[in-house]
Image 1 (tube, rainbow, N blue to C red):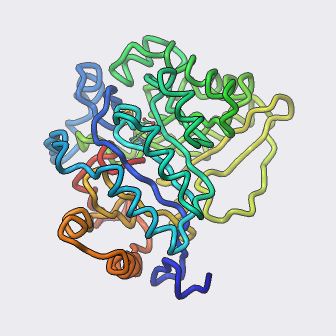
Image 2 (cartoon, rainbow, N blue to C red; image 1 turned 30 degrees about the vertical axis):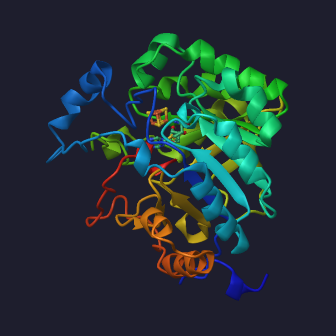
Amino acid sequence: MSRAGLLVDSHGRVMRDLRISVTDRCNFRCLYCLPETEAAFNFYRGRWASVPDPTPIARQWTPRSKILSFEEIERFVRAAVELGIDKIRLTGGEPLLRQELETLVGKLSRIDGVQDIALTTNGFLFAKKAEALKQAGLKRISFSLDSLDSANFKKITGRDGLGEVLSGIRLAKELGLHPVKVNAVVIRGVNDHEIESLAEFGRDQGVAMRFIEFMPLDSARAWLKELVVPAREILERLQARFSLKPLTSLNMSETARRWSFPDGDGEIGLIAPVSEPFCGHCNRLRITADGRLRTCLFSVTEHDFRDQMRAGMTDDELKDWLKSMVLHKEAGHRIGQRDFVPPARSMSCIGG
Ligand code: SAM
Ligand code: SF4
């Protein structure tokens, strides 16, 4: 496909990866995403004094009529694939809360040109849907798991669900989903004491354990730089324990820097959007459950296509619209800069 037929932005980056949020609802209340539990409140309370103007985002679940139907998502994906997108990731909110998710996976996996369909989930409901999702064409999965201690897991997620998530990870491996990745958001004073045990878990289970820096995308706007554990610090701690070896990647747009263990199958990934931004190679687009295009995780502007589709926009018009939106993709985020403005919606609405 010539560059003219691709989604190229004004910085020369070509879009390949589409993340689709299928719902903004969630059955967890992670303190870095939807901090609405008493434990989350208690954790942030002492720290809020140092935040000039904590303005929690008022949250309401989006009504069903405003959520994209599977047919609308499929139509959008077909257009995007014709313009060079080949990787799809379903996310949320919690994507497993969307009824019949396997039907959507089936529809998308039948689109010519879709090379890869992945799912990001908190894993709590995975067992119920695992077989059906695999049958429908799901290839890869990422679980979120921030603690191996059930009390800490509950403090972080607001849900007593560690056992379910661990079973989900085992089941995904048994079913042959590959790779199985496990994401942990590391927060100072919350789960940074578990970094080594989470890495050991990855090694023992033979899964890719990925540590993610805490980003200012929580619904309480309670993020503080002091709560971020920089990837470099995580790496130093892991090196002291495991003598990791760097893995080289040919994929410049990969978000994680990857490491292998001298023994064991697992892998470590470090994702450092705050301390070492990787925007220069970003090839990702996102669509929200209510039909808006986001050209950056930190976009402050969202572009509606749901209403345009419902008003009769043709496929060619949709593709032209998409190309013109991508042209204006942001150069990068501005976390840590004086003029940084957080997005109006939290990670649970944007789709991680
Ligand atoms: N509910 C699913 C889950 O938790 O995996 C999918 C949606 S969640 C928004 C996607 C990813 O975003 C998860 O791995 C989660 O840990 C991550 N995430 C959410 N809020 C974050 C934040 N403030 N900083 C960094 N990562 C965050
Ligand atoms: Fe946690 Fe994911 Fe739900 Fe956010 S969307 S509260 S990260 S489970």
